[in-house]
Length: 149
Image (cartoon, rainbow, N blue to C red):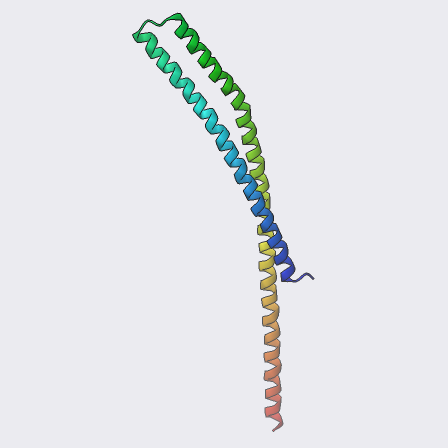
């Protein structure tokens, strides 16, 4: 039967693997946040540009070249948005996959923590039983010694 130290070493190994997995997961989260922030900023720019152009159209007469320039700007933003959306989705999927791996690593560490805890309890009970046996034996010897006098 394997002793507690063996299980503790395995638990420590699994814990280090979990920490590595957690670092990888955190990198994936940071990447997702960075991609999502780029997309958000681009969407925000597009929204602001469209609102300001609408306001300009309501309040003033707009020249044709301003309309064309605005359309090109909006089109450029839309192309960037179209490019960023799959990147954001890919980063999200990657992050979710890393989260699943992190959860599995966490569960693995918990399993070995439970095994170590169980082994310690088992060892403590064995030690306590042995101690009780020795106390019983000692009591029996004292009783017999007392009877023989």
